[in-house]
Length: 478
Ligand code: NDP
Image 1: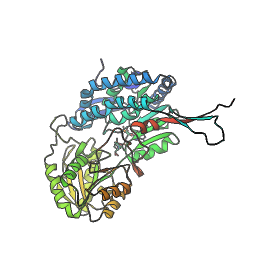
Image 2: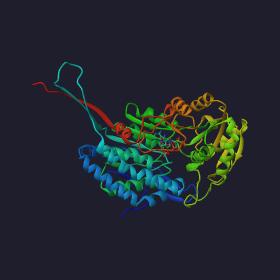
Image 3: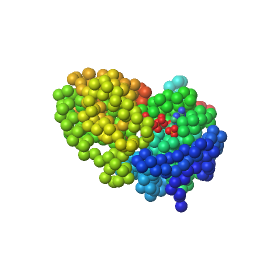
Image 4: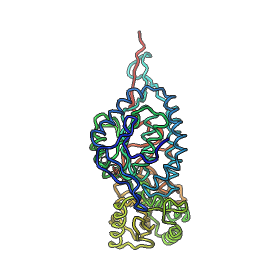
């Protein structure tokens, strides 16, 4: 029977205590000590990569059907343990139990099911021969597993985000070494138990713990074939330098604009802003970090948003009735406060909220935000709806595109013309029309433009990222 809160690294199919510093894991909601994880040393990271490289030699040759059967077994175990793991996510990260359950059931467990379906249907190509006037050439394009995948992940979706490269990686024949966030190592180990209990061979998944230095050592390891990193743009730049010529996917920060045009359905736009700004207390890469509202509907929009924001229940994240829990780390809380202070000092006004008690920040609406404010240019990652007013679509598009980020944008309008124009002009990896920025589809490509990242993940895009495309040419003459 699996133990709920293992605190060791998982290397070569065995649970091994870390030899590095002790890292305490505490609940952001209560301050309660949840566990202590010992970081892995560089030698232990090397051991984990060696285990993954050894396992890769045989795993890449295992039949597709066997890999798919293991994924199906893991799906069933993951569903059985979804509530238990969701509870640990809530304790470690502070997201509400409803948000954690969504992470486990709708995203994480289903990665196993989706990946097994996707690899079964994934096909290569046969190309026509155009170099010579002959009918003897056959050109085959196939995709081979890239090798050892290094997954380095953040705390906000601590299991789901890691699950994408790990599960798709295992399904296509890669092996993996995972460095979860120091803030959420316990739920990470529970996910490793799911993989272990499903019967994936020793070494196919390995987990090492620790802070950024452990992640950096892993990313730089010469036997790692692919780096899949999700985290802040600042860290992502360092990871990109460290990964050098390795294949990589970088999923980084965002500063999502939600644009509300004059003809928008205001109720729908206000509902979307509630999800965009306050889901997971604003700690989402795809959060609506800026709400751009046409001057003619600003008052109506703020009234609708204020009414809905007042109804949000902030409190114990384990309580089913809670809408918003605490902020995960003191650093995120401090940055949120700094951004609000800077905005107010430069002329913005707080419409609602603005304060905090311990790690719990009030859902906040701030009006009069302008481009010179930090809250407009940087990723806040807090429960804040910063309102920026504009008078023309051109102006809105210019503001929406002016930051270094380009992850997700959304536009509310009834005009097909304006929607289409905005969708084409917004330099973001995803543009939603009449939908919150915090909307995802697990079978659609996910990733950012500009400093929000490089590459795309999910479904076939993840398969492409974790495989090497190979051309094989046959000459059948003679
Ligand atoms: P960080 O960038 O701080 O950390 C991400 C991971 O990288 C953690 O495991 C961290 O370790 C590790 N790390 C830190 N330094 C290094 C390094 N030099 N080399 C390798 N690994 C390192 O992000 P957060 O955990 O604070 O997550 C929040 C950020 O993630 C936000 O900016 C958010 O927008 C972004 N994000 C992006 C998503 C996307 O898909 N585009 C999705 C979700 C979040 P440790 O924390 O243990 O020290």
